Length: 186
Image (tube, rainbow, N blue to C red; front, side):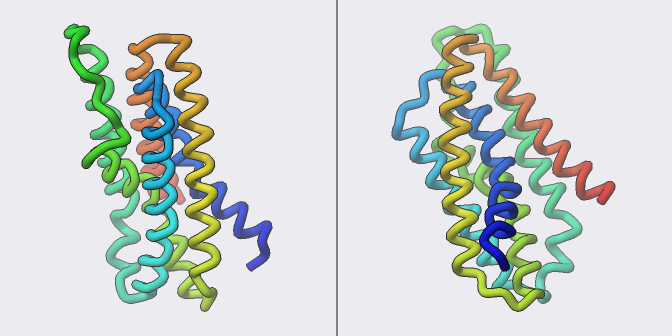
């Protein structure tokens, strides 16, 4: 596999993480460097691990995962996006904004944005390609795109206020719908 092809695959896989990072940056408005690092690290880690898991699973599990991977990603993203929108309409100004860079929310976002990478790992196994270099490149690109997305979201969030949480939730739901439609029509 050429370096250009690998970078194209990595960028394509990172687009979901990038969009979710924009939503997280919007939600947090003033994301700290620690929050940016935490989300970038986890998105990059999951994006690197999923192709390895897919590659190791090979043909054995692919027939079971492939029919439902888009439903899993859609469900996780729709749930988190819906929760963000619901929380934005809460009138309690003292309520703490849920941090998407912590706990189960971050784990669910990491899984949802990296499910496609599992399929790439399965494909590479079927092609007989080594997985270690592609997994590293995929993880690094996802981490970098997450940092860029968080910074963009943070800047827009600071300009437009805390209610941008609605936009962040809508972005997550839109990504989930996009994943679902691509798999159902493709």
